[in-house]
Length: 352
Image (cartoon, rainbow, N blue to C red):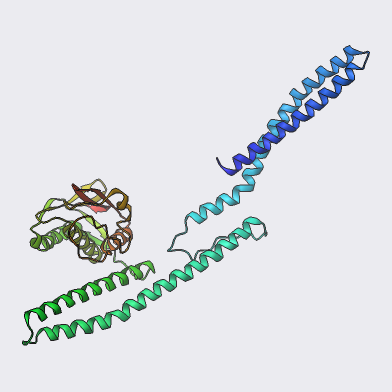
């Protein structure tokens, strides 16, 4: 129940009780005087008149008071409702937005001032976090590049034993993983700060899907995973070709990594009215229902199978950003032990 409704009911209840007290007091007084009067018929007539007056005047007064109370509370809470609707539009990307103040110095104006100060502090904190992440990522790239170069040089040493070569290769793999984490953090941090501009041009999405299908078959060979392109309707979308290519690579690579040896990956691109719908499924161990809402969180990894999966937990976060930047939607559905599918829907320009 809304606050203004509760206040109106309380106000109405007070009116009814007050009217009842007045009516009871009047009735009691008249009755007492009537008992001490010799003109009983006069007092009985006065008592009847009082009762009729309470019904004819008191009841409309109560109803009018209820209506007036409802109108007053609605008018009083209108600024609060507007403030609530404005606050609902604020998120981590527009914390710099300031709520308009009435300037009359009342409680709502003070609340608005406090909220603006709070969002200002949050905006400053978010900015510092983004700046730190960007600076840290930039500073990490140079030593990682140097370390990789030194290890590649050491790997060319003919005096290395097989064990030493294996150790160097393992170190290079870890450096490559760190480099991917740094690149992913840099991308997401720049995206949060609005520093990435997407190119808007017509893109044949079916061509990108066929290219990704060819790449996926190569990536799936070591695990003997069967990749199938079931449907690929000609469809054109408006977007950034490079980012859409990255989206497809992330999703297909994720479907292969989180799969079982000898499993299957299916890719479907179909024209669904005014939308292009991309569906990528895999036969991996699946994701528990209570974890599915978190799969797009950064660094979250829903490890459910016995096999260790390489990755840093940023692939789906990057995929979600690319999808959102194109005004599209992405949804993951998973049945543990059966099938996991990712569905992307975006507006289509025309069919080829």
